[in-house]
Length: 432
Image (tube, rainbow, N blue to C red; front, side, top):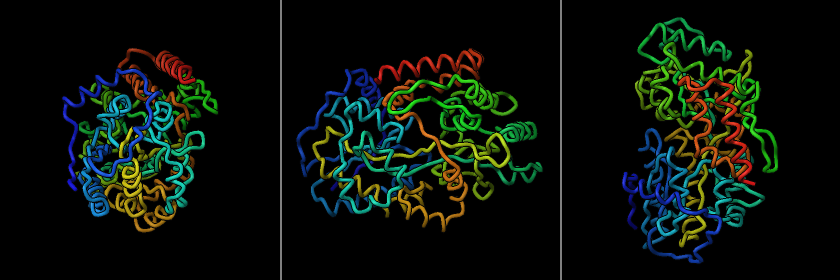
């Protein structure tokens, strides 16, 4: 079997983006085929430092090769930022679509509504490793009682900070969000060439802990019926706290407004920031950077001392596309990529937290850096509304647009959050 790993080219991306304008996908049906030969196409997300992930995946593919002669596997690592357009395009054009994809757990409901993911309930139930899956992780692949993939890893974010810088400047580790903001400004004042706390206007899941810590919510409701709450008084306090970090006294808006999560982690890892909000999944990238051996991680503080800011319960899943013509093979590879052994290797390589409770306990015992993330998980996490509308809200950049309008001075917090709430409500309404 031939294993090929490639990255998307500009022409291919342009073509896929054009296809993304095609009609809705709810009518797509299974190919009805289950071929055992040919090419199995896989899309996985590209990480800040992707090589260690590739190495783990390649080992899995080597085992898959021995079990399935005559099958070519093509693995493409796609940018997370353009996943919505690319995967939507794939749902609309089964002929060029992959058989297996990695996808964010916030996308599950939307992808199911689009008719893009295959129901693998029976396969998941029959998988002997599934019984040890974290219940929250299992919920992230479940819609209306049916399973549409397998959890790949879980992720939460915490506060990375430069121990050498804190020691040199005589700074204490922030215990509240107010101290976090003031410490960021002290770093910037003492070291004008550094960001105090690297923040990004396109870093939604780095911003939301500020909203949640102040008592705000994205939306209210349940059972698929939601109403936006991002413009509530409590949410606005959190938005104001986060957007106050964009300025010459911390992270200049001209440079930071367009930054996403990977950008802020890269800034920290390269020694250009005193602090950053990064995930357990960011550990490998930081270890590979200039700050190796000169940083530590603590839970992101809440508003009051002793509180941990609620973190987004993130993570990724793997799913088989409904249009695949290699269903059996795709399911087998999906399980191999998400198996306990593989998740343990991904933790060692990338710092990804396993979705299996027993494997997570094992890695927590051998690696101290896991502790602040486990503490954050234990303190209580939040998730996005369980609505198919979230995919539209996310891909339409509703929240990044809100943050960027504020930090650019185009709108104040009240006006920008009101507009964001209107867009969210339009999406909730169209989702039914």
